[in-house]
Image (tube, rainbow, N blue to C red; front, top):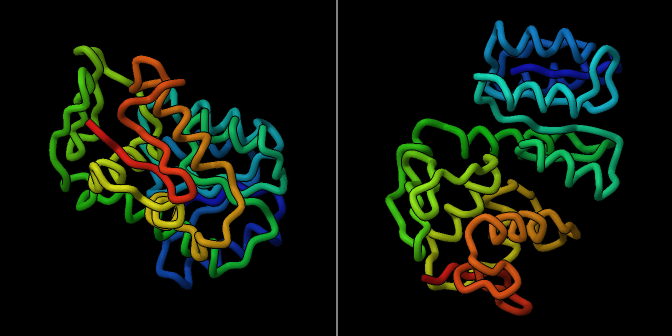
Amino acid sequence: MLVVEDNVNLAMGLARGLETDGHVVTVVHDGRLAVSRIAEIRPDLIVLDLMLPGLDGFSVLREVRQGDVDVPVLILSARGEELDKVQGFRLGADDYVVKPVGLVELLLRVRAILRRSSPEAAASGGVYELGDVVVDVGARTVSRAGAEVEMTRLEFDLLACLLAHRGRAVTRAHLLARVWGFPHPEKARTRTLDTHVASLRAKLEADPSRPVHLITVRKVGYRMDG
């Protein structure tokens, strides 16, 4: 696991907490050094700050996603604005946690990401058809009218969770717990889920403003039809 954080004391504290949870941790304090270390050690997960010397966190994430290393990334930043979160998820972050955060919650988020990205999780699931959209959950691929549809890790995890309950309403709390690993999803006040639903509709629906597959269930959550 790689921790990219320029605050030395915070980085060491994160490393100790993750090591106590059974992880082997490498720490770097510079964005450009992080990019080279990612290519060298190919970590199972990256905990990434945004405000870094050398190369900012968004740029690090962009380089990771453009490279050949498929690794989950958890952004841990003091920047809590909605635009920052949207930018992070659009670039392919798997989770976005705002500082300060308790160690217990952070470890739960890390465990949820690792669980979703495990080989066992990738090997499960089947093939679903939604009109001209084909989703292969085991292979983690999506195509529309025969053309590949690019998905971030979280977008695909959300899609797979909805497909697992196809035809049934799935509550917001369930989705936030299963996909994002929120420890208390019923108390969460976040637009992250809605942002990802909008992105999925743009990629899967013929008319995202009038969805026929990814349906909003008022005061409950969402349902996947078709």
